[in-house]
Structures are given as C-alpha cells and as structure tokens.
Amino acid sequence: MGLLSLFRSKPNSASIAKERLRIIVAQERGGRGGPDYLPLLRRELLQVIHKYVNVDPEAVQINLEREAGHEVLELSVALPQKPPG
Amino acid sequence: MTEIIVVTSGKGGVGKTTTSASMACGLARRGKRVAVIDFDIGLRNLDLIMGCERRVVYDFVNVINGDCTLKQALIKDKRLETLHVLAASQTRDKDALTEDGVRRVLDELIADAFDYIICDSPAGIEKGAHLAMYFADRAVVVVNPEISSVRDSDRILGLLASKTHRSANGNGGVKEHLLLTRYNPRRVANGEMLSVEDVKEILGLDVIGVVPESPDVLAASNAGVPVILSDTSDAAAAYQDAVARLLGEELPLRFLDEPKRGFFARMFGG
Image (tube, rainbow over all chains, first blue to last red; front, side):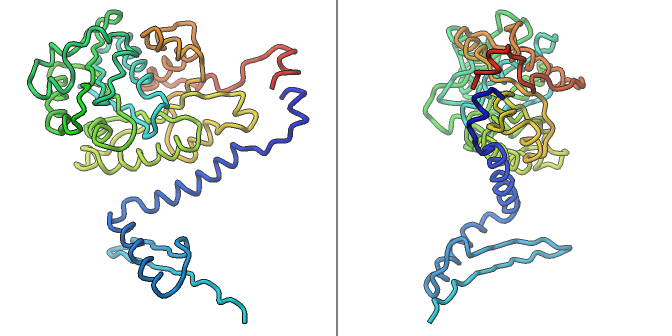
C-alpha cells in the first residue's frame, strides 16, 4: 500500500467479483446434468404465462430435483403484486 | 503408457497455447517423448509459439485425410529431441476434424510409445474444443483471475464431466487441474484481483500452477521460444513447477506474494 493509496478509497472489487461468481456458478451448475429441453421448456412456459399475466422472466423458476428413484420437476411463478386500489 | 492431456479454458486469450507449448517443453526436457497438437483448425498458432512456423509442411488434417503419414507431419523440435509438434490446418472447413480421424492419429501416437500427448484446445465450446478434450485422460484448465474466464472455465469443467470418452465410458472421468495465468500478486493484495484461493474455492479444483503476469511471456512468443525455456524468468519457473506437479511432485506454490519493492516505490507507487 503506497501513501497515495490511503487517499483513494476504492471498494474491494475482487470480493464483488467473487460473490457474483459464486452465485452464477452455483446457478449454472444447478442447471447442468438436467435434460437438454429444460431451457426451452422454461422459455415456452414463460410465453404461455405471459399470455395471461405480465410476469418478469426472472419470476419463473424451474427446478429438476432428483430424489431416490424419481425426479420432480418444480415450477414456481411469482405473480406480480396487484397495483393498490 | 501414453497420457493424453488437454489444455483448455473456454475463453480465448488466457494462455492455452503458451501453456501447451511450455508444458510440452517442460516434459520433453525431463526426457519424456511428447507430441503437442494444435486443435485450433483454421487459426494455426502453436507453430509460432514453438518457433517452427516455417517448417510446417503437412498438418493435422492432412494426416487425417491420408495426404501424408503422421511421421511426415510431425515437426521435430530443434531444441529438444523428444518433442514433436503437429500443426493445425488452416482450412476453413469446420468439419475437417472428425472424431474417428482424431482417434486414429492419437492411436498411432500411442502405438509409437509417446509418453505424453498435449492437445492445445481452441477457445469456445465448438467442435475443435470438443475433440481436443474428448480423448483426454487429464485436463489442464487455464484460467485468468478474472470473472468471465472463471465462469467459462466452470462451463468447460461441466463439459469435461459429461462430454468426454472417459465420462461416457465410466473410466473414472478426466482428471482436472487448474492453472492460473496472468496472476498479479500486487493487484490481489490490493483487492483488485481474485486470489488463487478465491478461484480454487469457486471452481473447487486443485491448482497445478500459478504463472505470474510477466513481460517475458510476450517476449518469448515474439521470439518463438516457449517461455519455460527463459531460464531467469518467474513465469518459466512457475511453468517448471507446474510440470513437476503434473509428474506427481509436491511443491508449494510460488510467486503468490508481491515482490519486495524499494522505499520510494512503496511510498509513491500506485
């Protein structure tokens, strides 16, 4: 640390990078090993839901859970809040 | 027993070819018979880094197509007797490499009792990258301490675990190692760059080498001499360590700390 760097207060960008990577890597690993149709299924479901409700793309979560002997496809849609009044 | 090692990364420009050339030289220096193959069809570059670009007569695709024998296409290194280079073709035909063709070339090298075959993968996850990793026993995943490189490396790790001959045939999978390049200890100390520990933790793999950022790497490629042969360089020492670890030696990582700087540099340096 030089004297000059004492006057500069920078956020620690490495820790920001690490946190972002931790999240995205975990998310991408989660989708791995699942069937190849999962992303397409997600997109088409989103289109169908969109016909009726205006949801955010991130509000639709699809997870494939493996349990002993069977797999569960879990779909969760967070509906937007109704505007007040 | 021949070991096939893929040097891969996903992202371009992180040092795959530099690493392939240096690892191949390092292994040959220890007396191993090594063939290093450029899988970047259409964008031949390993020949330049190895300094043999003017001696390329036949290439990888010529061998696959039967235009020449493998012996005719293998370029013997002028510095190290046991080192051979197989150049990439410059064809624009994306289908020039086939799984069967690659398998035949590798089988011939195995029959010829090479100790190591280093496959220098192209960037990306297309056919060339797929075939470079497909027959590998081991993978050296080259990664820069930088966010997009780390993410791409993770993607490559996913492919190594699912789209290789070993993974498909249940042969215990490909053994994976990380090799960090362009490491800048000062920036790590300042919190501006991911540390070795950070990358290791995110990707969950052992680290086979950390190559510090060094002007010697560019100087070496300018000269066509793999950087591992620049004996006074930290980058060379780091690659030599990585080769030793590849051969099973246990060495502590070096060059992880800031080099000591003089008083003035410390007071006024940025």
